[in-house]
Image (cartoon, rainbow, N blue to C red; front, top):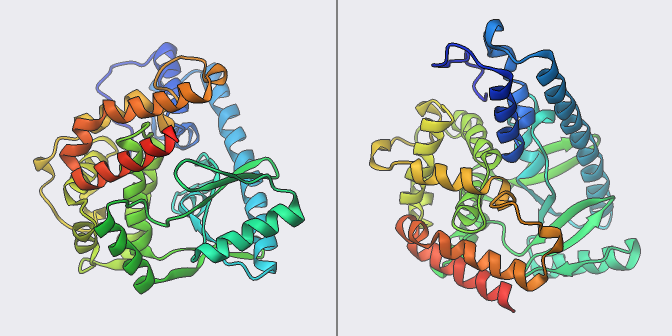
Length: 350
């Protein structure tokens, strides 16, 4: 799906019911567009019928249209902010989409921004509220939320999702030392700043950890870091300091599990890993179960009607999701996991 390899399957035939199940799982994990791009690698006698292909093609077209809207919106928002000398940093999203062979087939979510100082963030939010009628609300984790041309935008208090005090301090020092990539992404005639290479890898890694021990994580985020590794390892070389960065951040054991998952279940060639390690030391099956259970940020944990839930019911369910993963969390990143759970659960209950 990601590596342009020939399709390998142990089944002698695949029925349309099988393909419908694959499509359903791809939708659940928000990778339908990426999977559609891989269908030409399937042998002709095993490809889905025209009816299934039509459904998949419609979804892929929708993803492409969403990406165009996202890029247009991103361009517009950054133009407005940059015209007032604000310099937001784009986290994940369209910046990572550019690492894919066909960026337009990576499903997009919301726009995540970071400002290099709390003062700049506050001034930007006051400007957006006063001159663009943005209804900005504060979230339990300290981020801010509003809509820009119908797309969700979040301003984050931290660039990297590290919450253990020592690791958080280290991440701040790393960001200060490494800086940002001023040519990270160009949309139209707008240049959008993104995190520098090593910082971006730490950001993607800890973002997955945060959601894996919480409400859930989907394949799209795991595909993101796999594609980032593929591109970045050619730039940072074998003598990079990613191993040291992960060690100082307190996520080496978790990273070994993540790397094992990428190689075992996503088929990522080991040479794309930023450093060598014994992948057999960690079994990724438990992470796979979290991915299967939660899907895209836990949106598919169960079939309850979330639209009719009360605020308190949503908060309780969020807290319970952390409790469900507590053993996993404390096994692979105990200090970081405890800090995340403490902060987010308290935030949900406030």
